[in-house]
Length: 230
Ligand code: C5P
Image 1 (cartoon, helix red, strand yellow):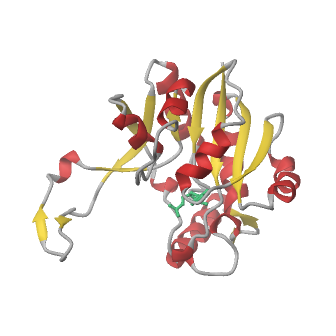
Image 2: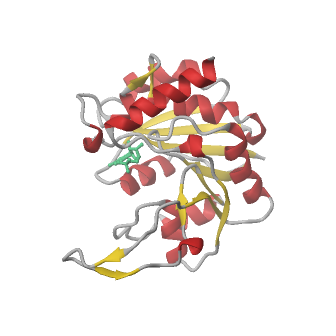
């Protein structure tokens, strides 16, 4: 069986600053998006057959030409992204043709350095029977819930909290069903599945799969790339 992957890359990335949208900011001479695509292709055991990238509207053809050299034998589609991340994922999902595909990965262009073994853990968990899988890491900070005035409401026990990364993996029919209703503020795709009452399984994530959000994260990305190339 084969895998399809969706990369929503149509966000502006305002918290990162700069002129280009976040996915097109460069580290080590390549865009974050190209690094993310390379990472998926490097996970050879997942047999990536189809890659759909949601890009800013109007850049679909240009992005297709730019990404084509990196996708090997995988089928590449570039579609226009939407207003919110969930809209971009939904647009991408429409072009995935399910026969022969047993897992759909949803990844962020903003996580360019995910190691292949982490991607394989997600896909293998789907192949072992899970319907929805998220890679996670324990949280190191104490997390508090606060009210609208910034007053602390409570402190959930830290051992029960994890930070969630991407790519997240889904059985294709479930992901379609999850995206068929309103997104209502969902911040990841697993959350849409949870709302359907589906059990979401976790696998171990990776510190290298950190998300580039703020300018300092770009420095960390440069350092990680240098370390890998040394
Ligand atoms: O902004 P944030 O880091 O949460 O975005 C996560 C991913 O979702 C990024 O790769 C971004 O390009 C993508 N995105 C999108 N369409 C949007 C908003 C975000 O494809 N409307």
